[in-house]
Amino acid sequence: MQGPVEYGFTDKTADLFRAHAAPDGQETAVPGRVVRLDRNRVLVASAEGLLHLPYPHHGLVPATGDWVRLGHNNAGEAAVVEVLPRHSALSRKRAFEASSEEQILGSNIDIVAVVVPVDRPLTHNRLERTLVAAWDSGATPLVVITKADLAHLADDVVGEVILQAAGVDVVTTSAEQGDGLEELMQHIPQGATLVLLGPSGAGKSTLINALAGRDIQQTGSVRAGDGKGKHTTTSRELVPLAGGAVLMDTPGVRGFGLFDADEGMEEMFGDLEELFSKCRFTDCAHQAEPGCAVQEALAEETLDHRRWASYLKLQRELAALARKHDAAARRAYQREWHQKVMSADRGQRAAERYRHDQAEERAGKGGKRRKR
Image (cartoon, rainbow, N blue to C red):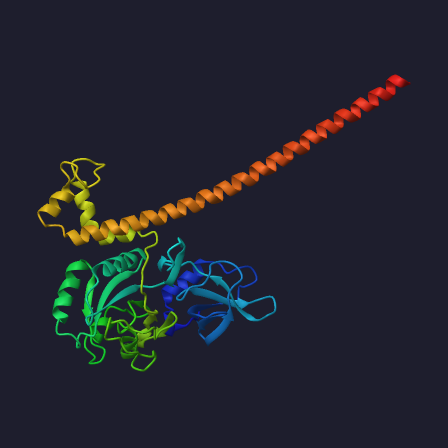
């Protein structure tokens, strides 16, 4: 079985295709990987090269990084005929307030690299929520500090990040000077896929160009006033690297709303889970209850107030999202129940009319017999 090796096709990927039977009539379909999603087309890599194909008409909606089968449609044209199951998916809540829908940013990712530039103040809450999403994706989180040559406070930022991202490897880089690139590549095995995730102007495109050894991504300047950059990357796209590794570039993400991230919360805030188990009462709300281990830790300053506030904020966000899902489910159930009631009511009225007509018909026949 042949596939796009430069886009991460390995023996393990071939086993994935063998484990899932091809759709009926598509036994000759070949492996491919989604490189980029455009407005009306999907850019897919195969062993033969890149193809621009229409979106599939059924099954999963493709995401950048998906493994797909490439076959033919009814007209005999090349087409995506199946999206294979994902072993990981990086997602967030869609970026408008009223939404409770999931947005898949990328799939089949092995390492999620959270990019932290040192030329702006470290946003602790943003780093925590992004690491929660990284853990929850099923991939391995990694923190990549960029622009280390631009700030004399780089060591302080690195120290803060290491303390906050306990259990996550941290790599310091300077793409302009080539520092840290070799160490970063050691975290990307052959055939693995790395996604860079960070705000606009964080230096992701410069880092990609340095890793690829050529100018693939356009780079832009950062505003001096607020440290924000322009979106030089406008879509998520896979970029092949040397040795069969793959890098997924993403546009700068201004906000990262969590979506169903219970596992990520457990990984990121496991120390708090241990504290909860030490409370006197199992239903402790961690506010003013006697014997609350959380309040004791806050008073003794063994638990950072900012970290506790961040945990509570993320939990409120996830709870609000769950309520939206529940509300949507309730509305769907009510609509379905209303339709059943209306259908039953119509059926009951029809039955009553039928019984009434039958009774009148029998009464009419009886009257005729009496007249004879």
